[in-house]
Image (cartoon, rainbow, N blue to C red; front, side, top):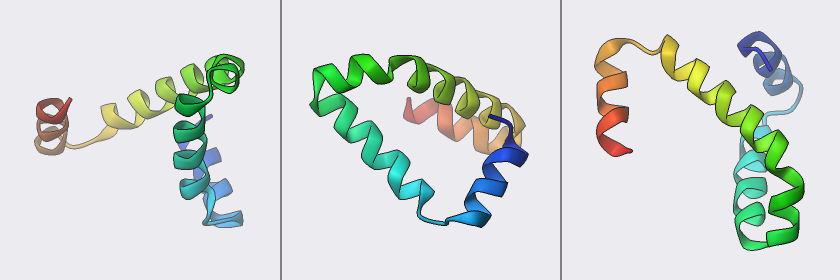
Length: 67
């Protein structure tokens, strides 16, 4: 998913951020659900990594320290 696609989704429904957090929590809690979602979660992780690459260096440095 590209940033522009995510922005479009966010414009359609601002609750998407909360839903993403809920999915991550539930995938961790339920092993079967987590296994089923692994491909999607990997793609989401790559998306987030791509977003981080766009961050100004001063913000990226802070993110590295919180790892």
